[in-house]
Structures are given as structure tokens and as C-alpha cells.
Amino acid sequence: MTPDHSYFLQAADRLGLSDWRIQQLLTPHREIRVECNIERDDGSIATYSGYRVQHDHSRGPMKGGIRYHPSVDAEEVTTLATLMTWKTAVMNLPFGGAKGGVAVDPGRLSKAELQRLTRVFTQRLHDVIGPNTDIPAPDMGTTAETMGWMADEYGKYHGWSPGVVTGKPIEAGGSLGRESATGLGLYHAAEYLFAAQGREVAEFRYAIQGFGNVGSWAARYLHQAGGRVVAISDVTGAVANPKGLDVPALVAHVRKHGGVNGFAGGEPIAPDSLLFADCDVLIPAALGDVITAGNAGRIRARTVIEGANHPVNAEADAILKREGAAGHLCQRGRRDGELLRVGAESAAVLLGRATRADGTRAADARGVSRSAPYGARAEVHLSRSRVSTGGGTRLPRHCGARTVT
Image 1 (cartoon, rainbow, N blue to C red):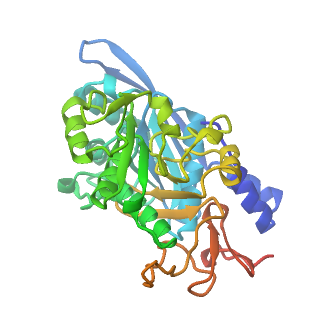
Image 2 (cartoon, one colour):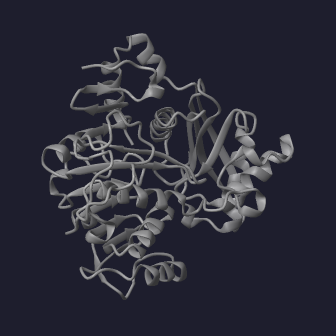
């Protein structure tokens, strides 16, 4: 993932930040690279590169996930750590931003090998993380069990401190609802977006790229609400059914076979084609930078709802606003149960109490500082740290900034 500071620089320009402050905000507090040697089950020795970037701690302990994926590198981790700083600040949470990971394909390691790798990685980091310093969490390729191993290994050096990580197993002090939290947050983002238009989740067709923790739970909630999930992909393949996939049956298939490939309830399609599926709502819930200037114009969905970290780059965002999705809604979430960000990166979301077709009013949008009376049109750009209404542009109150025009 190539660092893209376009949104930040737009916000910095509107805030009138000095070059010195911009440079301070873009420069990570600490970047760490470690090498993790482990013994494989066959007796061979393997070395994996691990990273932890601690971007900013001015608002509180740093917070961010640990991912296991072959694409993990210093640039990707730095970009995601920076995003965590902005997300916690926009939501006025007392945390800073961090991110970490190991360049490894977890599907190629046994459970015992993954545990050894996690413990060695924790040994390399234990003196720079902690409940009051930097708090890791699950991310792509890691699970509650991974966090349990991290907490246990950290405890060898500092005593049992369950607050060192979030997303732990329930029996180790984890939070109920953590596993489904991000997918549920995405569902609520869709619910509020459509309620503001006087419509409901059940009226739309959905295509979901990624069937991991975020995508699978989002699919379940959308299906339960009557939404028609017409296409889903993961690392093993992709499947589509224009009449709607049986999501519970697909979940059971994935649990048994390890992926969506081979699911009998739909036709196999090329995974790369899912982004261009015939659907109303596209949900990229896998990797970052999957929607680019090279493919944004081919997207047929009217609405894009983000489930992954930064799946739409800045150039593609401009194309979507000009030619593509009417509502490019970004949902960011922590996997320990808190919805961190619901924003819009397109001038297409009506906030306030929208009136439904039956005359009733929709519930308020969550996680957004309202800058106009109920019923007024508001175009919210939280990724750019502003909320615009007909009377000008007002920055969210917690940004401590003035109203500009």
C-alpha cells in the first residue's frame, strides 16, 4: 500500500496548518522492524519480518491492529497507523494511532507454528507496547486466539495485564460482541444511509469482496434484514447468484471447507470481477487500494460502503464522485466492539432526521457531529474533518477549529 496523504493534505489546507505542523503530523513517533525466527513443524528454521509503527500518542495510548498477510511491509503499516490516528481523533477518543503486522501467509502455517511466531513477535515488542502505551488488536489474518497468545507472552515479562490487547477470547477478559462488531457497524452504516433516503436495507442488492470477519458478519446482518447478497469473494474464489446467496449456508460451507470456493448455492465467478458485479451496493471488505483510478469507472454499484482499511484510493474517490457511486460511505470499526468512524467521502449523504415514505422520521445518524438543525441537508466529509451545510463549512466540535467558508 503506497502512502496516500491526499485527504489529510486537503484537511490541513482547510485548517491552515503550517508546514511544520503538517510534517509533525505525518512523521511517525516510532517505526519498528523485527526479525522473527521460528522452528517449523518439520524442524526447519523460518524467518519472518514483523513491523510495528507507532504514529502518534499525543491524545493517549496508541491503538491499532496486528495483521498477518504476505503484503505486510513498512509502507503499508505506516499508512494504516496514520489512519488510526485520524480515526481516533475524529471520533474524539483518547487514543493515538498505531499498526503492526508480520509478512506471512497464515494459511501456510500450522496452529502451533502461528503460536510460536506470535510469541516471538511479542518478545520483540513487549518493551514498547502496554495498556498505557500501545494496545494491539486483531486484524486481517489474526484472531482472538492470536491476541490471547500475545497477552500471555507479554505477561511473562510484565505480569498478567489483560489490557495490553483488545479482541481477546472472552475467557481471557475479552468483550462480548467483539467478533461481530465491525460487520455490525457496517450494517448500521448502511441502515442509516438508506434511512436518510427514506429507504431500507432490504431494497438493495449487495456484492461483498472479502468473507473474513468483517465481510461475513456484514453479509449475515444484511441477509437477516432482507437484503439480497448476490456475490461474495474471498482468497479461495468467488460465487454469485442473482436471486441471492443463502448466506447461512455459505457460512457453514466456509467453516467446513475453508473458503467460498465450491459452494453449490451459486455460480463461480472470477474473483477480480466481483468489484464490477451487477449490484446496488459494493462492499470492499478485504485489502486496501483495491479500487483505483484504473478500475473505478467500471464499478456498476450506485453505492460503495467501505469495510476494509482504505480500499478506495484518492484518485478513485474523485472518479466515483464524478461518475460512479452516489454514496461513498466509509465505515471504520475496532474489533473490540466500538464503532470508530462513520463518514462519507461523497457529497451524497443526507444527515438529520430524514422523512421516510410513510411520513415517519428516520433515526439520527450515529457518530457524526450535527452542524445543522434536524431536517436540513448536510454533506458530511469526516475523512476531511469537516461537515458542510448550506451555510458554509463547519469542522466537528472536537477538532477545536473554527467555521470557515
